[in-house]
Amino acid sequence: MRVRDTLTGRKVAVAPAPRKPLTLYVCGVTPYESGHMGHAFTFSMFDVLLRFFEANGVRVKYVQNITDVDDPLFERARRDNLDWRELAGREIQVHIREMTVLGWRPPDVLPRVSEEIPQILAAVTKLHAKGFAYRTDELYFDASKYRGFGNLSHLSRRSMLRKLRHEGLLGRVGPDAKQDALDFALWRRSGPDEPAWPSQFGDGRPGWHIECTAMSMHYLGEQIDLHGGGRDLVYSHHESERAQSESLTGQKPFARAWMHTGLVRYEGYKMSKSRGNLVKISEATQMAPAAAVRLYLVTHRYGRDWTFEWKGLERASRYIEQVRKFLADDARFDYGRRPPKPDPKLMAEFNAALADDLDTPRAVRALRAALRQGDAAAVRAMKEVLLGSTDLS
Image 1 (tube, rainbow, N blue to C red):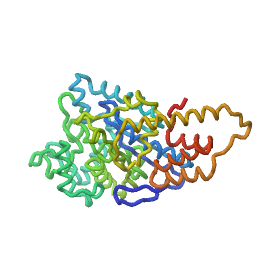
Image 2: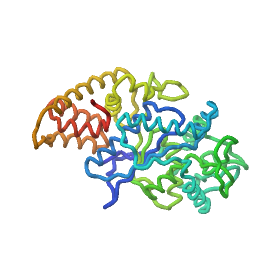
Image 3: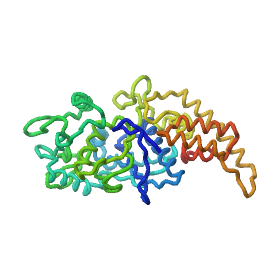
Image 4: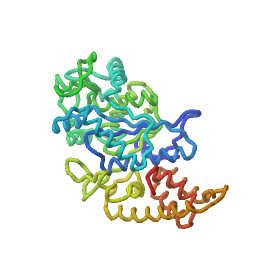
């Protein structure tokens, strides 16, 4: 399979090492609010990728983290007068339930930051010992010590600073703070109502970026085959993660390929909590079958931005009803002891589409061709990859 690597901009071949599973790490949710179509798009696309590999005999070890130690979670817990652990636990269950409805094959490991502190502290301590971090008011990674900082996101220094400022992550520069605005916290002080763990750098909690480095390495090793997430994470999260990971181990590349999903827009703007233009997963599945929601998502290229439209979901619903009726009728037919196999030409086109940078719109066209030709075996095989375990009954 070939995927377009965010770092190089080129399509690169992805395959596991001999006798080893392919390793896949995808940045997951901060569990403080139920999921929206942006979340559903990202995780459904990586589910298609995972199922495609496995359908073709490739073993995959898939890790998707839960960021339950982070500012937005604590802010929401304060707002709602809840214990942060209660809020996180509730929203994690919502996330799992919503993605299960959308046909998600659960990751092999779903680590929570709050349960991974020893690994995170070990990474923080090693970076400090190797001279990549300095301590003032907090422990910071020195971005100037990593050559090529900014190469993953293809951003200039000015653009990186602008994005940090826009996201409220710029911080302070000064004798008792950061040495440079691009430096980022590895270990930070906790607020009075936030969790804190003891360390040689003082009681506190991890910075955002180091969490994924530590969890990825703990479960998948120092180098991984594929690292994924939404495009909004390229900078600052993945840029920082790449820098600290390769500094920590001295091994390059940290990820052999980076895959990023496009942003989902609604009413003319990127879906965002601040703008209030979210379409939540629960809303979409109330309006249409979950299989239709999943189909609508996978009719878009994973790396491109697109606009959610209710009319598009309606069209997907009508098509899913055709698929459902076709498979229900076929299930009543007695093939005896030799059920038919899918047409090799149809499956070759389907597999070629997904092997070419996960071209799901082309794969959906192959599914439509299989339905037109009445090839139930091909429809079932394609459905298992594109629509996962969504219910068609």
